Length: 550
Image (cartoon, rainbow, N blue to C red; front, side):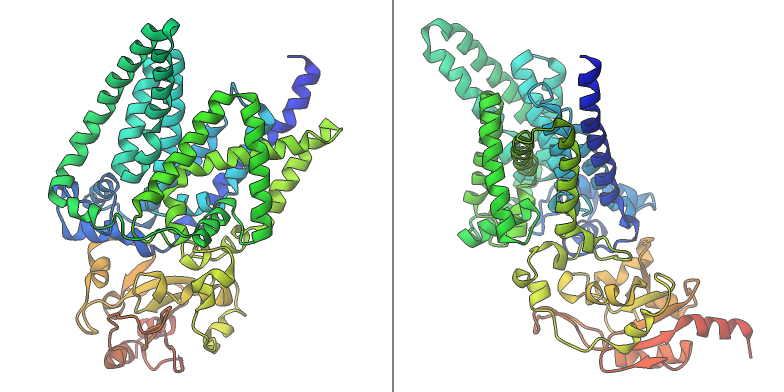
């Protein structure tokens, strides 16, 4: 490679490196302060209620990912389970995906396409959200990518290391979430057809038969550990899986909304532009390497079609199919990257292309949903109001949010320095439909903790018993507050007597806060703020007064 060629390539390498750094930062930003929400609680609830054998032998209707839950249970027994440790494996998987895709298929892809591919994945909202979620999807996405590349390397070069990597990645991906097998096992079909064509051609019949034999042997080596891991929960709890199959269906509108999530936009116009660029890139990849393009296209189309045809529960919600199909997201982004590179190559000045590519990526980030989500402080970046649909008019968490006056207490806090005050909000039902703080925190800009009701405001459920059993960063029991465990600094307890929900009328247990008020008033003094929505106690003032004595 000449010096001039090296100099021309250097900006693309810089862009690629910056994409990895920026994408890693987006995934890690404020992650240690995030509160667990929604499906992230499936694993916690099970590990509190069941032993390791029960976890190992049950899928659960609210599926909990068996190996991930066992890992969390090990942390729990070691006294190290908290929000950060639950998120860390997924964060590492998301960052590893960013770092590794530039090396996948590098012989077939030119450097500008790989740099754009990495940049698009770095700012892909769906991948950022799922990397920041304590669910297995970021791990399965990484493992399926490794499996696809490893199988192809084994088939083309017969490398045992590649074969071992494929078996490991496929078995672990399928064990983490069964639906990943819709993508990870497809290479057997693709290359099986290749072998079958060899059998049907007289001059290559012998080689084709050998290839089929290799595939059968390799398939056996892959399937046996999967069967060993999945048979126990299938026999003990197979009904949980069958109950979710055939339960829902995808319609055309939802399919388009899935595409918008994949494209990372709430705009129909921009999503259509992405579709056109993707088709351009697919043509470009096909002309460059038909085998690679056909291989990836078969995985993308057949794997996603298999998921749709299985009609899993909730698939009519675009976000469900989008996260199930996360392994296909990098393939789509590769097509878009190839299309963008084709457009950039039409520019007559090659030296401008890297800068224009960087400008496109920055513009897409600014126009997308991530900039608002990652504004500080935001401890609810995993809330469905940010990820259900990027178009607020189509997102029920924005469209159907209760219209109510914002308490003046929150407006007053907005005048204070950002993150200078701690709010302990109680009670809390740990699902998105009952979390008003995702709307109020952008207004008051202060830190938030969950106040678990504990044992003194009615009959507690399992969520109220978390604090005594686990050491959480972002949760504290009201029992602990009443017993004197007040966090340092300016801290307010915000009690919500009435439930908050989207949509209204959902059945939910809500403690009788009014019956508990005498306990709080005796311990913390009279409320410093009260309206129809919230009752606020100044714990800092109360603690200081107690320390000063009579």
